[in-house]
Length: 310
Length: 273
Image (cartoon, rainbow over the protein chains, first blue to last red):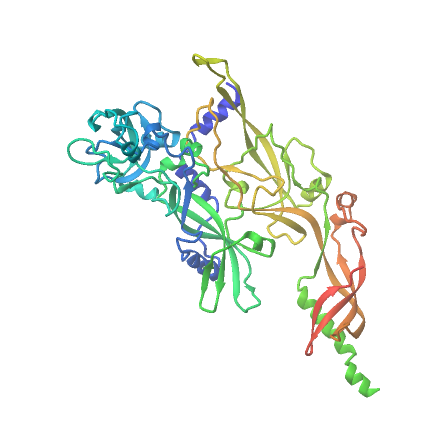
């Protein structure tokens, strides 16, 4: 047995992700109790609003995030799916793409399906094709050339294709928020009206209101510990500022988020912890977080919290 | 004469003020640093056919560490004499860590005819995992005997110590994969050796005015350098690269300017040579 094979075996049998994280965290010591200032800064870091580079961090799903879409389901205006019990106007969840029946899903979607996060919903697409020469008469036709025999709309071709959509429902859907207004994103397949028979009018074709196509995956991070902080600096305007390296930990990151399938599909890999450089400001009424922090304070004389030694 | 003295204010009190200003500026003495050759210090861990090794996520290479490095290289590589010297006198401590190298080989596979007219050579992948021993020579956190380059972004440092923060099963060996790594959040690499200068004498205190009339005080300060024994070795002289300066000066006299605020003097700067 070669050395590489041995190492690979050892890595394969390594502890699961949360144990590795616990190992990393435990190796750097306990809680902050070296003084009053770190505790104050930690309390201030927890005030970081979610809108700033604070508690919520999102990872773009990228091109490979959403599954390959049905080619005819994409641009065709008059294509809809027949509603089923699982995909109807009352469905709520994040839509992760569609594939033809039996086609493989993207690695990320497959990983989510394997983890029981995404649900595969079989659907039937109905495509309404206006046959050439049989379209409805236009104004030019009416005024110009003599009328030619036309077929009734009932003679238009309606083809059906079977496929599957992937929808994340339940508690995990909060990890896939709706896209920001203005963000480019696809749309889930439209239902072809309701009632008896397909209705291909544009007004009738709408995706379920509760289904959206996400473009990112978001996790909640919270400040856990101050690792290092600099000396308070007096700004020319008299205010005090201070910078610190703060350990942030993700709360409620599921195990499936740390698999190599997810790693392969996401442009940036989500990790259960992060070190961020924050700066704080004191106007005389306590420390408050500031939006832009950097690591320049590390050049000066800093205070390392216990845990930086072996 | 008395009137002139009163206007000038010169005398012993000015020397005491200068001394107070210098002490206020440099309470722990004035650091005087000599750059060290980048071949003698720094991170010299090679990449292996483009593959970056990764390190254990605990101990000195933990991503939650601020690591202070004097020198790092493969254990089997020869150690520079300055590093050897500093390790022998106890200033640097050596830690051996195991670096894992994941070498991925790829190439075009055999011809595949999937449909008439469609031919492809699908990629094949092969992973080869090896380990190497890397020696990291570290110094104390904020060691005042050194000056550091601080890196918080691994892209700009000469090298770093990524650790594999991933505990799940590895992907199949015949697939292309990139596993997530994190580097220590801060990395301080020694770039200069510092010794402390203390005021030996203050001479020739005189008042003057700048071109715009601002009154200042000039003084010649004689600095005496506390040179440790390891800086007096040939190994250190070879490693220190300071252009136009004696590596280790015993004492130097430099004109220094002080600004005046009321009765207090404030250190401004030395006269440039």
